[in-house]
Amino acid sequence: MIAPVGGATPISPPAVARVSLQGRYAGFASRFVAFIVDEGTATGLFALALATISFAAQVLTGQPIHWNRSNLWVGLAFIGWQFLYFAYSWAASGKTFGMAVFGIRVVRPDGIDASWRKAVVRTLALPLSFLLLGLGFLGIVLGDKRRALHDVIAGTAVVYSWDARAARLRFLSRG
Amino acid sequence: MGDRLAPPVEALAQAVAERAVELVVSALDMNALLDRVDVNAVLDEIDVDGMLARVDVNAVLEHVDLDGLLERVDLDRLLARVDLNRLAARLDLDRLLATVNVNRLVGTVDITAIVQQVDVNQVVQQVDVDAVIQKVDLEAVTDRLDMNAIVQRVDVDALVQQTDLAAIIARSSGGIAGGALDVARSQAVGLDEFIARWAARLRRRTYAGPPGPMDSLKPVGES
Figure 1 (cartoon, rainbow over the protein chains, first blue to last red):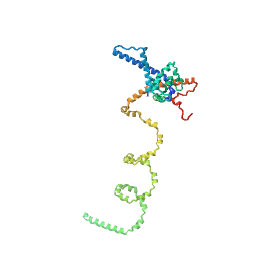
Figure 2 (cartoon, helix red, strand yellow):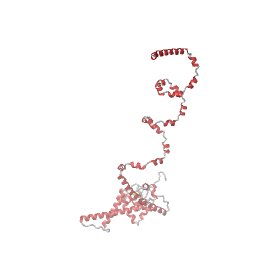
Figure 3 (spheres, one colour):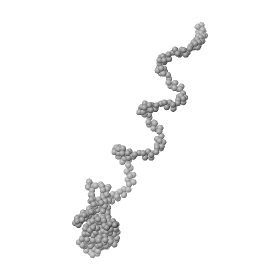
Figure 4 (spheres, rainbow over the protein chains, first blue to last red):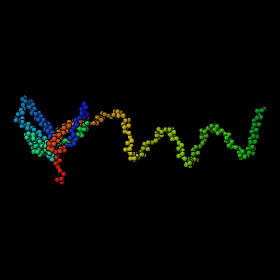
C-alpha cells in the first residue's frame, strides 16, 4: 500500500475505467500515444545502435564513423529497422512496446490473434495511412470498428488488452 | 481404760443399728409410702439446672456406647417421620454456607474425573452460540484488552524471518509501476472516449461506449 506523500491528493482514474474495456476496439488517443512511444523507442534504439557501431569502430580502427541522416544506407537501415520492429512485435505478440504500455494489441476484426502474415502486411501498409495526408487514420475516429486504412488492408483491428475494472480495483486497493 | 472399751461397744452399736434398720425396712409398706409421696412437689423442689451443672457430661458420654445405641435406632423409620420440607425451610442456608470452607471442599473434588464423564459435544450442541455472542459486550471486552502488552508479546524478529520480504518489496515496486501504468492507460482511454463522443455527435449517433468484436455477432436464429 502506497501512502500519499506530503498530503498530495491521489490521482483518480477517469470514470471510463470503472468498467472493463478488455476486447473492445481501442480509440484514437490510445493508439496515437502508443505509436508515439513506439517511434521514440525505435528511433532511440536505432540511434543507440549507430552510436555503438561508431564507438566500436573508433576503438578498433581509431576513427569514428560519422553517420549522416541524408545517407541512403542509413535511411534504408532505419526503414528496415522500423519494419523489423513493428512486424516482429505484431507477429510475435500482437503488440509493440508502446502498445503494451497503453494496453492495446493487434487482432483480427473478430478478436482472434492476428497471424504473422497479417502482421507483415499491416507493417507494409502502415505508411499508406500517413501518405494520404493522415486520412488513413480517419477510420479510427469515424469507423464502427475503429480501423485505420492499414487495418482494413491487413484485415486487422486494435483492441484494449487490459482490464480497466481490475486496474481500478488495484488503484483503489493501493489507497 | 476408756480406749480399751470403745471398739467392742462401737461394733455392738453398729450391729444393733443394722438389725433395727432391717426390721424397719421389712416392716415398711413401700407401695403405701410411695402413694403418699407427692412426686410433683418433690420434682419442684429439685434444682435441675444446678444438678445438671454439676454433671460432667463428657464423663457420662464416655460411658455411653454410641455404636450400640445407633444400632438399635431404626433410621428409616425415624427419617420417615421427619418433615424435610419444613426442616429445610427453617435452615438459614446463607449462614450455613458462610461456615463452609469452599476451597477445602473443592480441593477434595476430583474435577478431572467429573469432566471426563461430561459429554462435551452434547453440551456444545445445546448451546445457542448466536445468542451467547449477542449477549457479549465486545466493546467492553476490547476495552479491557491491553493491546500494548499483546503487541509486546509478539516476536517481531520471528515474524520477519517467516515473511518473504523480497516478495513484498518486489510486489510493492511492481505496484508503483503498475499504478503509473494504470493511470496512463486510464487517461488515454478517457481521451478515447472524449473523441468518440464528439465523433458520434458529428455523425448524429448515440454513443454507447466502445464497440467490440462481439457486438457484431448475432444470436443463432435471429434474423
